[in-house]
Every structure is written in structure tokens, then in C-alpha cells.
Image 1 (cartoon, rainbow, N blue to C red):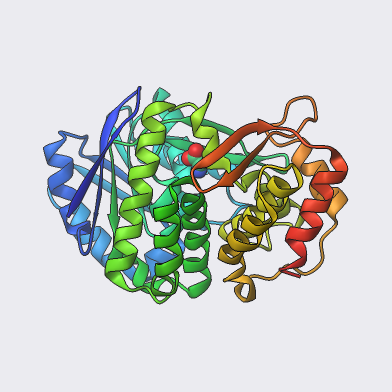
Image 2 (tube, rainbow, N blue to C red):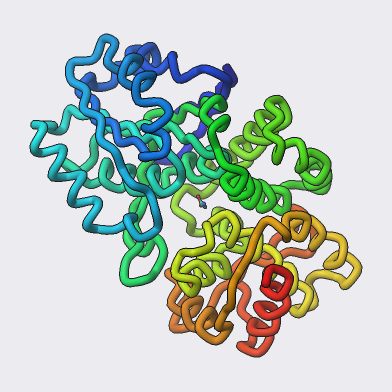
Length: 363
Ligand code: GLY
């Protein structure tokens, strides 16, 4: 198994990537001398396939193991669900010597991480991402949170895990739409890396879609390495880490406007398309490059659908994004892969046109 070190200011920790490595969990817990009172929160979809495997492996050598199911969706990524997790921890007599393990996709990791960061003022936490999206992005870097008052991830914390374990065998049961979600974040990294990486992503896209193991693992490692270096430079998003929001201001607003009928990773693909248009309208990206780069998100155009969309509402939601200041939306834009611009603003009409042009490809 591969080991990638994340060196954040608050904590250093490893990310393990490999096939059939879930079995290593007890050894890794032992090696790091983590607590043996283990509270495991598992995404319901994963539980259906892997309950026995999870219980058998983690019960080994532990003092106490409680497994709870979490029905993961953007609506259950709420303060009510966090409270339910606290209740369950208290009911089962968990204290500060607890290790919480999140097994699931990005929503599960975010909410369970938030519960871990707040229960008893913070208990040990391990991430086991079981979706491609969580593996390449959300499980690494310590962002945790919940949705609040129709704003995505409004309440949250930066709280780094003890380790992240990416066992690619979990991906075998993913539906294609989930793989597409992961590719959404991979496309983001394609635009954040250099041209060489951008073309490598373009070349391996179909193989990732078909879940070819080696290509998928290579891309996961490349994305995690990239994320680790960004988090090392700026753990709490005061500067460089903002690049990881490329396409996300558009995406989050679209998700809310669509009442979460569009999945996050799909919305990221639409959001990247809008960001490319806005980069062009702002004079940062040439017409020729717009045509070239837009090919990447549009290569999955027929796997994403948006029913109907009120652009004015999307704009209003973007204004209340947590990164906006006094209604002024801050954008991450680009002139080529790896050449990013942070905190840019744009006239409302320009943003609306970028939204209309970007979204039109997916209607
Ligand atoms: N998903 C963006 C970040 O972790 O900063």
C-alpha cells in the first residue's frame, strides 16, 4: 500500500492508498496507539455490502465497538443528525477516549468529522472514504461540516484525522453516477495541476469511468499528493487553499437551487464549465483555450442532467456563499492549468451570462 504524508500545521498524518487494505485498520490503530473505544459511522449503502467485513475486522483487539448507520444525503447533513450522533455516543458511554471512524462518502466524512471535532471538545477520528469523490478530495485536508439554513457547509471546523485509509475495493460497488461525481473533483485537480497532469487526466478519463484499477489508483495518488501540498501551505484557507474551490461557488449554489436533486460531483462539473466561461469573459482565458478546456467537463455532458434552472436564484444563492463578502462573490478563475487567480469579482451580468452559457450544455 502507498503512504502519502499530509503535513498540516495542526497535525501530520498519513493517507494510505491500496487494494484490500481495510484489513490493516486494527494494525494501524495499534501502531498509532489510538483509543480502543471505537464508534463507527457507516453510510447505509456501504453497510448493506460490507457490514460483516467491517465488524469482523474492527472488533479485533478493540475494547468496545459500536457501529451505527447513517443515511447520507445533503438534507441529512444537518445539525439534527449531528445531535443524533452525540446522543448515540452518550447512550453508549463513549467519553473523551473515543476513536470515531467514518466509513462512507463525502457527506458521511464531513458530518462525522464535525461530530468528532466537537464531541468532548474533539476526539480521535479516522476517515475511510468509500467513494471516488471522497478519496480524491474531501477525506483529506480536515474540512468538516454540515449544511445550515440552505447554505452548504456553513457550520464546520478544520479538524484533521489520525489517518485516512483509501481501500479501492470499496469502489467496486459504486454506481456509475458516483464515479462521475469523483471525476468531477478529478477534473478540478486537472485544472489545478500543470498541463502535463491536465493531459494525463484527459487521457485516463474513460479508464477511470470504467473503474480500471491502476489508472484510478494513479489518479487518486496524484490528487491526494496535490491536496497534501496545498493543505501544507495553507491549512485553514486563508490563501492558497482557495484554489480548491474552483467551480465550487457555482456548484454549491446550483445544488441548493436544484434542491439537491443534482449530486455534488455532477454540480462541480457544471461549475467548472461556468468558471471557464467566466474566466473567458473576464479576459483571463483566450477563446481558443476556452474551446479546448471546456471539452473536459463536456466529455461527461450526457451523464449529467439539470431539469430547469432559475439563474437569478442561483446568483442570489451565490451571494450568500460563505466565501462572499457583503454580497460580493469571490471567484477562483484560470488562464491555463495551474495558473489560477483568487478572489476575483465580476459584474452581475457577466456572472449571469457565464451561468447561462455553462448550464445550457447540461439542460
Ligand atoms: N474540498 C476543498 C477543500 O478541502 O479545501
